[in-house]
Amino acid sequence: MQIGSLYKGSGLCSFTVWAPLRSAVELLIMDDHSNRIVPMERDDMGYWSADNVQAQPGTLYMYKLDGDIERPDPASRFQPKGVHGPSCVVDHCEFIWNDSRWKGIELRDMVIYELHVGTFTKDSTFTAIIEKLDYLKELGITAIEIMPVSQFPGSRNWGYDGAYPFAVQNSYGGPDGLKLLVDECHKKGLAAVMDVVYNHLGPEGTYLRDFGPYFTEEYGTPWGSAVNFDEAYCEGVRNYFIKNALSWFDDYHIDCLRLDAIHGIYDFGALHILEEMAQKTRELSLNNDKKYLLIAESDLNDVRIVSPIDKNGYGLDAQWSDDFHHSVHTLLTDEKSGYYEDFGSMSDLCKAYNAGFVYSRRYSKYRKRFHGNSSALLSPAQFVVYSQNHDQTGNRMLGERLSGLVSFDALKLAASAVILSPYVPMIFMGEEFAAQTPFQYFISHTDENLVRLVREGRAREFKAFGWQGDPPDPQSAETFNNCKLDWESAFTGQHGQMLEFYRELLLLRKIHPALNGVETHRHAQELFGDNQSKTLLLRRWVGDNKNEILVIMNFNRDKPVSFTGEDIGLTNNSGASKRAVRLADSQDNRWGSGKVMPEEITPATFGLLMPLSMTAYELA
Image (cartoon, rainbow, N blue to C red; front, side, top):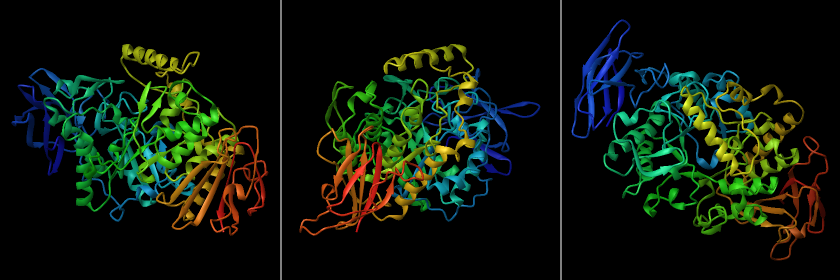
């Protein structure tokens, strides 16, 4: 069922809204000098419609419920006056696209760059991002991931408080601004990933309850009532969110959706909402001859999320890997509070490289129960890995990036761990030049009571990690402005050196056969079989040990590690010698101390890897 407003041309528009428990619904057309009331007819499923209504693109309207309550359209395509204002008719056929030949890129070829529209540039708009696309392309990025842009209150928000899933944020540039950005991305060979939220809606400006049973109290989420995906009247709710997912692909030519926190989506029906969404996405891919993708954020460590539907999975394409992040983060920071208490050993990182999930039906001290199932048979392309993201940075009390927690050498080591991994790497905006600006939580609600609740809630969260002091005020414009990237520093001093290091690693990943496809073989091991050395050897190769890469990482902060070529396997089973030629070293004098590993290693060669360093070799 089509929902919302649909402009049909010739000054005519159709309107459809789901309101199954209302006895009367009317369309209120808000003309320049007067308002018009248009009656709507109800069908058996609770959808109210008015067809061939005189309305142009740009026409403002609301719905009148039971002759009394006036509300914006739950499926509004644009809210030019904010979350409490009227909805606006949009003609999605009006925009002229230039990407007819664009077919997207495969997951295995993605290098994702996560960004927040409000803080990525000084102007906080879609068009300002366009000016940075050449920079991202030169860096080695192949896909940008945009944090949620569904209409939220005010102009400052992470985006997860969206109230209108179909409406693109007015302060960012609205529907046309997003289309222009996506079109420019495709011109430059960049895919566009959109972060969407289907586990809750924001606390201000969300009027869905006035229309129908969109929510249920049967389940609870950290953000309030759960969305009703499996109880009475759920079919209208399911249609609403599936239509939303498809609209990003159809109306905005988005290539991939990142589904926020799906562990907060509850559905115990026979056909899970995620499975149905995957089915509909696959059908659209076939109809449009273009592959659309779904990536989940999940802390369930459950392979069913990305397993094929014919193997009783939900059929999503990939998921974020917090286990990988936690393994790297704890080794570099020694943090052990909150969920970090479950991590901190080299064996954790080895398992993350070899099998995906670290917790695969393993006891979690943090959760006080066994957690996860085995992901050993999943493809590496089904995991997105990172050393930083908006959550892991922004949910710290002061929003410190990794650059504010560890040394310059440790940052290079973290980058190496992610980019040279067998998985799909993701970079959080600014990390490539070791940005020092924080990424803190910010809002611009108009309800003072709600602002108070947000402040109190954030303070409670921080206590779980043992952080002391007062967090920045999320409602303050200063908090938001402090989070905007400082682009003037990006090319100077150590920032410029880090940027050059990222470019080098991403180029190496692109051009080397053993690194440029996540379908290559991989094996990680602690170099000397214990946790004392804090040194990891990652092997990646294609076919029968051809084009083999050795990546050696020393996570020790003050002790170099010595070894011979034989220690890292430079003899084959027949006893014949091999040699390794250096490809990259994090201590190269372009960005490091100059104390690099030997340019060539044979079985008898002695090597000394500096603390918090990485070196990569190709076997010859």
